[in-house]
Image (cartoon, rainbow, N blue to C red):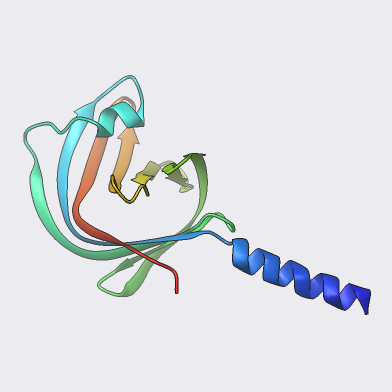
Length: 139
């Protein structure tokens, strides 16, 4: 009987403490940067030329299970394992694809929400800054 309660407790504890970040993107600003200081420095400055792009996609990032699902136009396009660094409301998330250095930088602070996608090759970064997006709150 004790083991049943323990299993139920673990299930509820894991379910309640799971952390999923969902972001819907509608418009991005795309640009490139050369930066030797790292991804936070690269995403902090927008460079010319840049391109504004309308998009309809969603990221579902499960920090507990270290996975990501990417949807474009409501269709699952890719899934990946992730690694991440978290400092308060700032998350640097890397998608673990072979031979690619791709990820996102997310600030979940309600007063300063930001979302950047990046792809790195050497010290060059392709960056998409979300200009129209929303965090989807859990229900």
